[in-house]
Amino acid sequence: MSAMHWLWLGATALMLLSLAVLLPPLLAEAPSPASDPDEALRRLYQAQLTELKLERSGGRLSETDHAQAVEELQRRLLRELDRPRASVAWRQSPWLRRGSALLLAVLLPVAAFALYLQVGDPKAAAQLAQEQPDAHGDGAGDTQVQAMVDGLARRLEEQPRNLPGWVMLARSYETLELFDAAAQAYRQALQEARRSAMDEEVQARLWADLADALASAQGGDLDGEAGTAIAQALQLQPSQPKALALAGSAAVRHGQLDEAGKHWRALLAQLEPGSDMALRVQDDLLKLETLASEDSSSITAKTAAASKSSLSGELRWAASKANPSELSRLARAQVFVVARADGHPRPVAVLRLPATALPTHFTLGPENLLDPAVSLSSFPELRLQARLSLDGQAMPRAGDIYSQSLSVTPGSSNLLLELNPAF
Image (cartoon, rainbow, N blue to C red; front, side, top):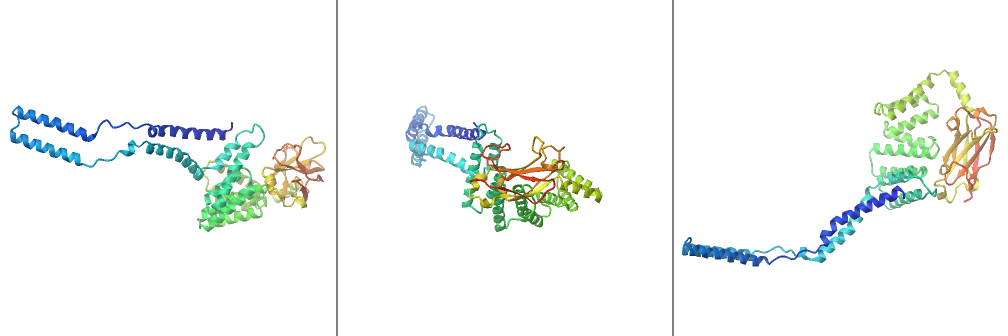
């Protein structure tokens, strides 16, 4: 039984325990009243009247005092008998008590479920399910979480002006690594933020989140729409932390080291000194300083060597499948671009991309090497091929779909790999 099942069982047990405490008093039979209140007053009057007679007989009260006391006692009795009494019919009615118990038994679960729908966190549920090992390998947990997220998406179609809901949906998609869907949800959130005139800080954060999702969907590429989103975030809020981090990374990819240092120093100024994030940014700034201090000849030599240590090109669907009609089958699919060499027992380099990112530009470089001690330039010729795994498995399986195999030399660019999935 998964942790999600235990979660729901625990919630149900707590609800039943609450009802077990609250319902018995309402369902218990109410005791009948011991006696009539008016009859009790009359007995008290008779007792006091008898006491007055004894007082008069004993000579402790005169005839006049006795008559006044009796008259006063009668007046008090009449006032008490005439006083309106609060009805206790509701305490005695069994149907009213049972109706209250039934109403409580229905309202408590409904209120609990409504509260969860209002303030619950599907992203946390998705993370919880992903942390559990899939003993049967059938993806049942992922299917359950996907159904919850799909339910949130349907609810937002009916409530398109729910800004927190769109943000929650986007982050849920990111947890499931559905980055294209996450980007679309962030676009909806931005549209609602602009419509409701949210402050610039909120809009800048949404632009930065959109850029991050787009980059993840494109295998780390920060150009194109992702670059535009970064620029929009910094235009609204020049100190936006995530936008500064992404802008620095984009500048490094384009060789703009001074620009990268400017962005990362602005980010470092906002971070808590000594925190993990601050230490990482400091390390990146040190690397930039090291690169900037190298002379031009050294940089040129490294650039030439790096150009022979990478392969780049375009990865796309075959022309007949440029727009696959059944994109739902690609929700978990992954594409692996693999470079092999004759005489080498294992792949030299592997790049993993979500299938939903296609078409896209790819680059195999030093960061994709399986053995850092062996570079792409170590081999005179390489074989390059893409493999589509519909279930996202790294190990090849029956049913995987392969592109054509290319014989290339290290440093080759403008390569083209096409996949033709048979939907």
